[in-house]
Length: 89
Image (cartoon, rainbow, N blue to C red; front, top):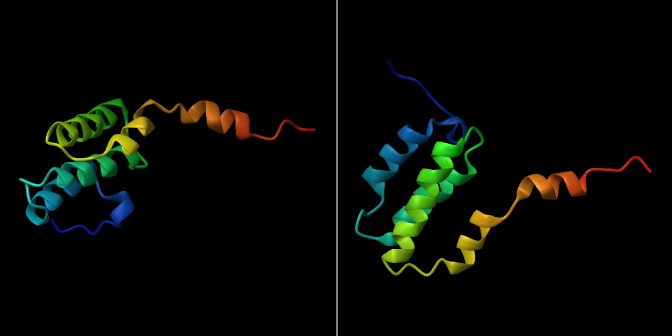
């Protein structure tokens, strides 16, 4: 069956499979791109986040300079959203 997906609604597994056809597997930055997609996907769950984290860690182990990105893995955005919500004053 043929289905059309907007990029931001594409199932993560399908997106990674397509990326594997286009991105060079030997380049660690390919793992960064795929990890970012998984980490930012609007329907990401803990399994998707863990796979994205693993891809970034693999990229870093392969000497990709992504230390500036790794800090985002430990940020707690739930607290940020809670703190940014209006207090009703």
